[in-house]
Image 1 (cartoon, helix red, strand yellow):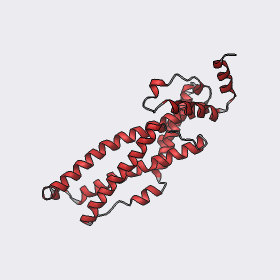
Image 2 (spheres, rainbow, N blue to C red):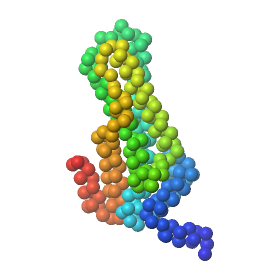
Image 3 (cartoon, rainbow, N blue to C red):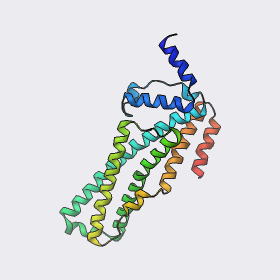
Image 4 (cartoon, one colour):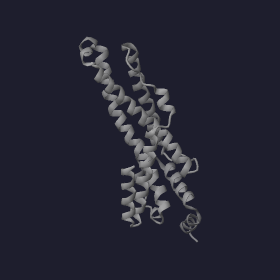
Length: 220
């Protein structure tokens, strides 16, 4: 029997989670998530069952969400840095624009951003533990982007808090945001699961069931 034949026989003997984990670790060893399409190959096994497809799609949902959040945060960080620079260098000119409404909107924007970023590591950890036996589901570049995003979000919140202390306005409670599992975490997990499940069902030709997954999520 050839090496390919032995490997195929070995893969058939694995259960769903073991097969998905073997594929994940093999791909992670080859490179980062952004380079996956350079070294990845077409996989037919995810369409063999709903569970296999779900695990396969879940890997892409988690890694894509982290990369997308990093891009959005980078854009917002540039805007926030520019705003801070204007305030610091032109305090007299900038002061009239800092109305209570503006400050409240600024605080809420950064707070929402921090809540979203803080939920990502928790969501990734829960996915890894629940579906991949505690093994890391993110590719190396996604892990680096996630760590960088968390640091950047904290810097934005800390920068706002310095301003809040100086002006005597409401601060952002960064510790409570990062320590609590709020609704953002549940929303992330539900969204990733819905997308992974609906794609797995669609790949098996079960379009109506895939539609029902999406509709149920939209109504939740």
